[in-house]
Amino acid sequence: MTLSARFERWGGSTALIIAGTGRVFTFADLDHQSLMLARFLRANGLNVGDRFALLMENRFEFFVGMWAARRAGLYFVPINWHLKEVEAQYVVANSNAKGMFTSSRLIDVAERIADKCSEILIRISADHAERGFESLNSILESFPETFEERIQGGVMPYSSGTTGLPKGIVRPLGDVRVGTPTNLEELYRKLYGIDEATIYLSPAPMYHSAPISLSQAVQFYGGTVVLLESFDAEECLQAIEQYRVTATQFVPTHFVRMLKLPAHVREKYDVSSLKTVLHAAASCPPEIKKEMLDWWGPIVHEFYGGSERCGLTSVTPSEWLARPGTVGKSKTGAIHILHPETGEELPVGKVGSIYFENPDRFAYHNVPETTSSCFNSNGWGTFGDLGRLDEEGYLYLADRRTDVIISGGVNIYPQEVENLLASHPAVADVAVIGMPNVEFGAEVKAVVQLAEQPRDTGSTEAELIEYCRARLSHFKCPRSIDFVKALPRQPNGKLLKRELREQYTAAD
Image 1 (cartoon, helix red, strand yellow):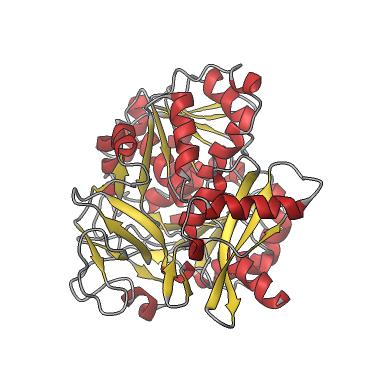
Image 2 (cartoon, one colour; image 1 turned 135 degrees about the vertical axis):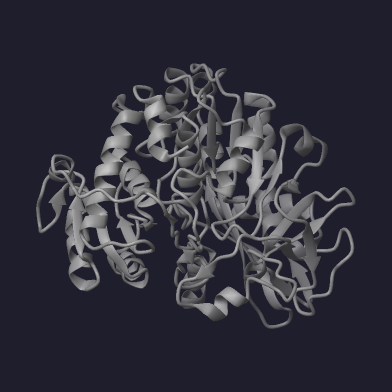
C-alpha cells in the first residue's frame, strides 16, 4: 500500500492532537501538507539521498517535514533546538543539509546558521515568510511539479555527543518503496500492538530518535499521536485522562517527576486507559520502576536499543518482576558478551562488551574509523555498552565502557551506585563519576540533586555515604558527595557525564 493510500484510508481520522491547545490535525491534513512539501523540495533542487534539516519545537509542522522527507526520498536531520548555536550549526553543516525547515520562534538562530552553511538551497518557515525563509502556507497554495514517490527516505539522527562531537547516523536507502514499513515499525507493531486504535502520548522533544520512530509507527498504522509541547508532570497526567491515551513512552526522569507529585495530585487523574507504557533511553533505578508498577499496574515495558539500531531488547512487566534490573531478551539478533580488550566470548554472568548479531547496517557520516569500531570481525554490532547475560539469555546492563571507574585495578560500575542512591528519599537525581586518587588511581564521587535543600549538607553527605556502605561493598561507595541544583541532562533524560567530568577536571 502506498503512503498516499494509507493516509487516504484514514482521511478524516485524527493523526495528531496538540495536547496543550487541543488542536486536531487529520490524516487528510498530514497527507496534503507533506505531499505538497515533498513536491516542492524535489522541484527545487533536492534529490534522493539529500539532507533536509528540521530545526523546530514540538508542533504539527515537524510531522509535515519528516513525512515529506520520507515521501521525497530524503534524509531528514532533526536538530536539537536546545543546543547552543555553534553546536546546531555543526550538525547542519556536517550533515551537508541542502534545505532547512524552522519556525518563527527559532528564526533568528536558523537564519544565522543557514547563512554560514553554503549548501543550504531552500529555507522554509512553518509560520510566515521572513528573513529569506519561504512560508509553508505559500508552498501549500502553489502547485509544485509532481514526481514519482518511489524511493523512501528516512531519518539521519545525530548521536547525543556525550563522548565527543555528535555523529550523523546514515542507513542506505536502497530501493525501498515509499509506504513500506521500516523494520523498527514492524517490530513495534508486533511487540506493542500498535494499530488504528492506538492513542500514543509523546512527551519528549521530537528531535530524539524514540519519539520520532514511535510517532511515525503509530501514524503509519493509522493511530493518533498526542503531542506535549514540553513535559510537565501534572499536565502529562491530565493529557492521559483527557485524550484516553492507550500507549506512551517515558524516560526515567519523567517517572521521577511524576512520582514526586503529591499523592492527591496523582490520584486526581484517571490513567486507566493506558495499556502500554514504554521506557528506554536511560537506566531506570529498580525502585523507581517498582513504584511505577505499583501505581499503574503491570503495563510498564522496557526496551534497550539506540539510534544506531545495532540491536534491540525488550522485557515485559512480568519478566522484569521475576528478574529485577534486566532489559530483557534480544528481539533482533543473538547477544554475545565479549571481553573488552581481547574480544573473547565471556561466560554467563561475566560483564563485558555487548554485541548483537544481525545489526542494521549504518555508517557514521564522514567518520569511517568510528563506524568500523562498532562492528567486529563477525559483523556483530555494539552500542559500546557493558553488560552480562543470565542463564536464560536475559541481558543486564552494567554501564558504558567510557563511564567505568577503575580503582585499584577493580572495575566499578557507576550505574549500580546511582541506582542505589536514587532509591534514597532525599535524592531527586544523581550521577557517579571517577576522580583521580594517588593511591588507587581513581575514587568514586557522587554528584546529587536533592529533593529538598537541607540545613546541613554535611550531615546529609554522611547519611548518604553510610546508606551506600550498608548496602554495597565499601570500595564501590562514594568517598565524597557534592550537591548541585541540577545535573546536566538532555531533555530525553540522558546524563551528560562527559560534561560533568570536564567540570570537575577543570576545577581540580
